[in-house]
Image 1 (cartoon, rainbow, N blue to C red):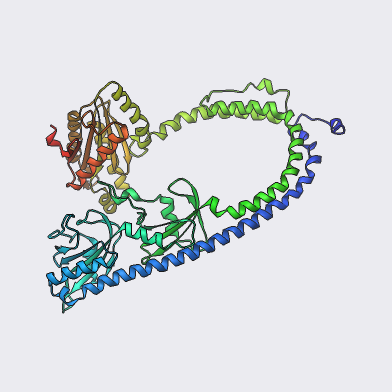
Image 2 (image 1 turned 90 degrees about the horizontal axis):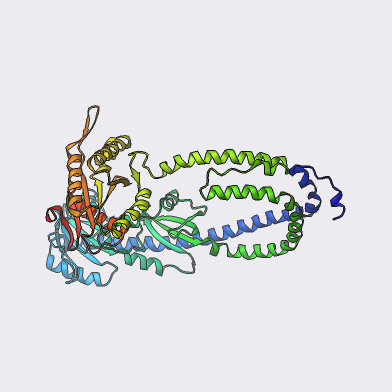
Length: 549
């Protein structure tokens, strides 16, 4: 240590680090740690990949067999003579008996006009007899192709529950379409089958369709559709890529990092996704890594001790820079470091100080612009969902404290997907801008208009009774209907469906998110009731606007 004190001390970082090289030479030996860790990592990944591959192969075989058996069951039923002859009494007795022995929760007989003749729901369920199902995809495909078909998730018109349907056409003696037999399977059944088929695997698995809707772990909730159970887009994309030779790394629905692997089933319409947490997957690697790390701790201890000697010389200027960084991080973007205080230190620190001051000034200017961009939808120039979530709670709390009314209006452009499919997304974007301008010009200055997502807009009206918000909503609806979109020789008629909820009108609303959710529920009913109309969330349920005005 006395020898080191005789070394020259040039006023540069490079000169100061030269003095430390003598002490860190032995650290080169640590380089063996890198290839060792890499080899262990590759072996762990390979082992995990093989284990998940075997598991998915077993799961795929199990579910493909199950799907084939259920589809074969329905196909066999559809070809029974008394089914083809429309012998309803004998058919219904057979359906009831067969349902008790299988996984089907309901068996339905549909005639060639698409009318339900009978089903096997229990007496406490709502009957589906005489219900029309000719708009269902399974009926249309059976009529067109005369082949069995397995659906994705749909809401049963009989049980009002999310189901998977196995459909098979009824063909008469001339092989002409004469109706459909289909069996419904609740998603709980698929979930149970998935859990029962897990053998020796510690991870988590589930099934999705090509739209990303989960077919397992599906929780039924009133007034909700399967759209509420979509997996994140990155998970769906990973499944669609179908990288059977490797593992995917991403965050799952619980924001935890996992290793994942997927495999298609049901002719590629569905995917089984298997996930295992990183900690669990890397447990063997962590154990080996810990042993190697322990061996390096002793050597690292001496290295750290030597580096402390160097840190005394560079600690103060770094603290100056860190203080500046913290100030900027806390929002003091106009903070400047005193360059004269760093004059006695290395030239590099002085240059860093000058660069930091320039950066601080630039960040201050950019932050102002970025904040504006972060709360604005660039397409429609309206506020975005983030702004609504932030300001909505503040506005609602203020109305709550002042005991004022507060209303929320949720709007959705009717058949907007058809606009995109027919005219393209560029025209679709212009239609969105057109509707956004109409909404902005139809509301008051105190109303907060936001593009909530896709083709949905939300208007938050503080200090506004439900009756007043209904008038605002009707004005918006009428203006949209009366002002089609024009471009060159193109004319597109646009309508909107609207749901309204108000604090102070319904005792069920006590928070901003309950207000927003209530308006969204009313919007859902408005669309289900025929679109281009208003529905209001009320104490007695969701009612027509005429009952309020």
